[in-house]
Image (cartoon, rainbow, N blue to C red; front, side, top):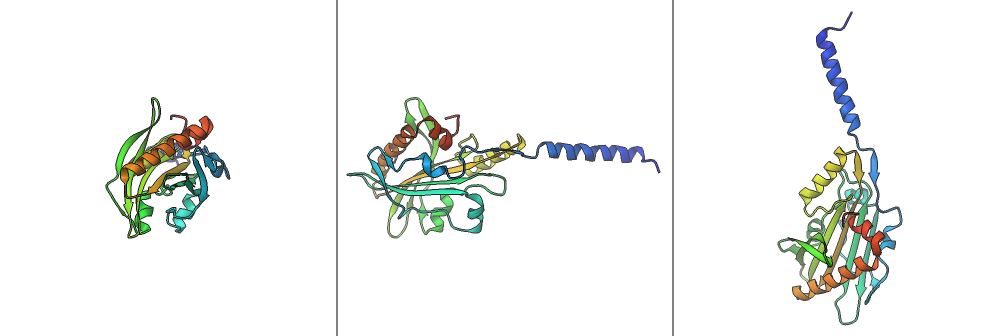
Length: 224
């Protein structure tokens, strides 16, 4: 039997839909950080600070989804004379899709028993004429108060919210890319928010200057 005109039309539409779906299937990965390289980006000694231990750093919850999301993690505590310790976390995942995306700290802190203040979205100036979008909040538990600054990188972008993060992942997918993802979080345990912000700001500026252009590309992407 010869196919009818209707069969040909619907068959052509189905073939076109399949071809479009195949063409839009992400096939090229954006990997700014190679396996085993995350811990090498930021040195153990940064200006006045020295890596002392990993104690006290609030980590993303160790669930099965986190194990699939993160391929590399670095958690350190940096100390310097006459300053409170700085807790530093980087969590990296090589494939950010609609199903697997890096956890934001607003998830892992409550999971560890902290109550959070309202989150502030702001632009952080780290060098003259250069700034990055970040988020700040205060986390408080029964035993301590912690001031937190963080940013996330999805591929070449720094989305400042969960919604922007999802949009960035979807935009890359439509363009045929599977982006990597990175969370960088810096925090200080202190009841003095102004002092904590000052210490965090000094630490971040020092880090971004010490690691050079290559390190900044890995932490911020080429746009920043």
